[in-house]
Amino acid sequence: MDLTYTPQEEDFRAELKGWLARVLPTLPPRPDPLDWPGRRTYDTGWQRMLYDAGYADLQREATPTQHLIFLEETERAGAPYVGANFVGLLHAGPTIAAEGTAAQRERWLPPILRGDEVWCQGFSEPDAGSDLASLRTKAVRDGDAYVVSGSKIWTSHAEVADWCELLVRTTPITPDTPKHKGISWLAMPMDAPGVTVRPLRTLAGSAEFAEMFLDEVRIPVGNRIGEENDGWRVTMVTLSFERGTAFVGEVVACRRTLGALAREARKNGRWDDPVLRRQLGRLNAEFAVLWRLTQWNVSEATASGVPGVGGSVFKLRYSHARQQLYRTAADVLGPAGALDLDDPHGWNLDRLSSLSYTIAAGTSQIQRNIVAERILGLPKGR
Image 1 (cartoon, rainbow, N blue to C red):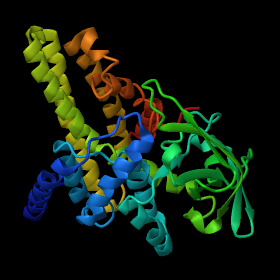
Image 2: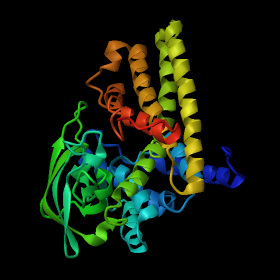
Image 3: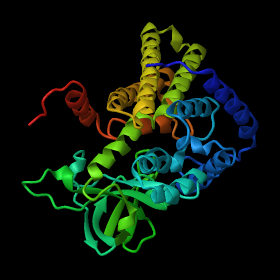
């Protein structure tokens, strides 16, 4: 495994840094982080700038290492994150690139890369919990379409999305058939008749999640990614991107946040507390290791085309490290600074968001099961 960068990759890094230095000062003011319609406009505008400059194809044509450099340098420069484009750029798009037909790639990838179309994720269901294979939203074949009925919850960015990566059951659950065998992965237009979206307000006051109700929604069979009833395997590809490489920019952001915390501690006198200094030191080591693990996952993706199960190791450790980072922020800033509700752009919003990370993208319990069974070879629990 080679974790170093080639001269060509370093040239790419220098070119990107120069472009960022020129364009970032020209951007309009960022919208309120809780205003997702406003953020969609802002985020898709930034995506179009990337596309016009030739950098959007990094999500499709570049090597995983170039993509890693892109995420590293844009985050270091304080460039906009993918935001409302998260599902399309980091989940659905890579899945379609890996598993879709040539016609499907041509239909969906260019609009994602241009920022013309935003996607949401329709995986979780109210009665399935963390057991994703127990989903019950059903799709019945009717000629050249599936008729879909059911409901989803925690549907990321449904309120502002044009398309949904949707998991449906195309074969009913029976005692004789493994439940994960009857699932299919569909691309659903959000403006289709029968789709109802009800926003869910988070602890932070944001509405990037929603309930979604599907009442006999007709979805063309041509919108299926992969074969019928092979959706579980396709979903594992989606989740490997979500857990393996989608958090790269956030690791860089956390390392930057940690540096800001250390500077603040020196400024306000909290640096004199040896316990706090040890916490900051442990976090520094934790995120340094997570960055190396990210490079390892990218190296594996370079060889195989998709990140492997190492993404679950990363997701498990990163979720807890991020929560510890913002608990430490509360220690550094004190109650007044860490819980400043009048500053939605500050620490408080990020701290509240961090609480979800041991649940989002697969709970920590699920990640431990994956590590135990697929990496360590331990028997499955009964």
